[in-house]
Image (cartoon, rainbow, N blue to C red; front, side, top):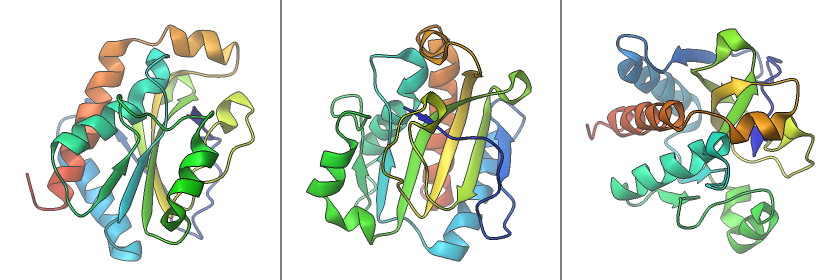
Length: 188
């Protein structure tokens, strides 16, 4: 599922933090951006990693969810892994099954499409994530804050673009996000 990354600042005056996944010190910089989110809203109680493993470009969320599940971040609940993805077809059911998603500190993570110059950027933002907006789907907003990773170029034939996104890019971005998250909690 693709998040909306139109660049509109919906954060109540807080600018988004953008980090290029392969820049020197990217993990530490992203860890700092996550700490910036935690200072305002607190460490998340739930992480919802949105996407599907049936589309290479949309697998960013489930790969991050799997990585974080392996890190055993108890008591933080991780929803959305390669084994049990959270995607367009089941997002509403997941929210109904875990009503605490509506009241807890939730970090949402999703892939996005953007401009060519933005591919590889990981963006940390306040406010809910609007999953599916990049492919014109009407889905419930999720989270108090969110991360999006721009995995490819948008604007034309989004489903085809997602299917043809390099897995190497998705895996490296997921690794950066996962390492930064663990580091932001002082565990890495």
